[in-house]
Length: 245
Image 1 (cartoon, helix red, strand yellow):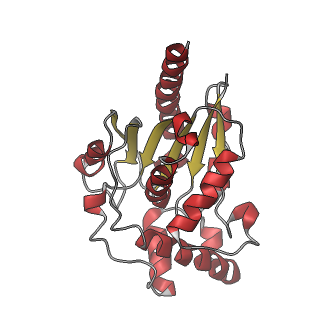
Image 2: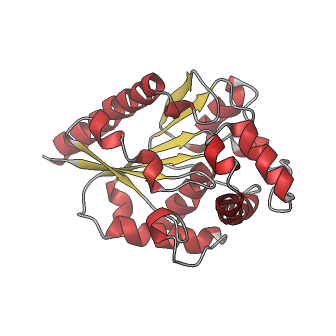
């Protein structure tokens, strides 16, 4: 039996960020990147910065796949959206198939509530933020038309992020694990990520990896990340299958 790993992108990114992941995981795991409206392959759709609307859309996409055990991986703003999705899933039968939550590159809630909103940044401020995260190729930064188009998407996603800075999360029974880059400019200590343990009755640990905000852009770190996820995810689903017998 295969299981599904649904991946939520960070601000300004698209599902293509995870395009190589299927080649690096067990054949028992199918990686399914989720695309936000107005991004990537859905670029013609209207952007939305409403987290509840976006969470419902992501749930609809998840439900369109076979009813198999699944995990949710969210990076940065995707990690915040993950909790909106988890909350909505609690009232749905689909929640029985949610086996694992994976938070990446997002400090625990007490460390985000006082962050400065980013949706009001000037064009120059947005570009400085991009350079800080080292997430955009130089050729894009040097192409003004392409950059203007991209910055419109980024501002929308920063607005989405701002809408979730003060979110509160109820404790979940779903197993939870966390990853981050040790040089991430938004994460100042191990404790800021390890604090996610207070949000699950089944905490599976915090994993610091080498690199910055996009630590998994490094091939070795990406493989390490996926090896750890695969081992835990398959262990959980094997246990569930044996319990059902």
